[in-house]
Image (tube, rainbow, N blue to C red; front, side, top):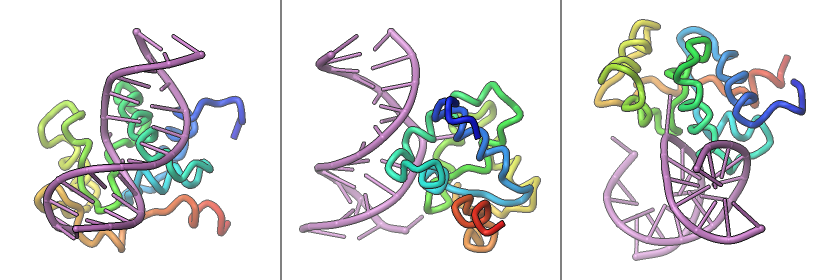
Length: 112
DNA sequence: AGTGTGACACTGG
DNA sequence: TCCAGTGCCACAC
């Protein structure tokens, strides 16, 4: 990773690495980038990447698995639709079986 | 350069 | 996923 890349770009780069049918949290990405407390900034990065369809921002949720950012997507249920399209179950804006599909870059990218 | 902002995370009650 | 309050970081203006 180019260290000259902005935090936003890094966050978006990690988001692109999220496998199909998996999700991660803002905090996990922030931690992987070396700023565990910058989870909120990761949210900004995802919002900034809204116009960039190469970034699967819908696979990034908060730690509880809540689709807190769905309101920022085009349709009211677009984010949920995209996730369900990947086989992810969502009830009341929350991802079910989160522990099974959670993808932690800090672990997955380090254990290579 | 200071202030405001936010798609979070954590702690105390 | 207790709820409410607080701290945190990076970015835009």
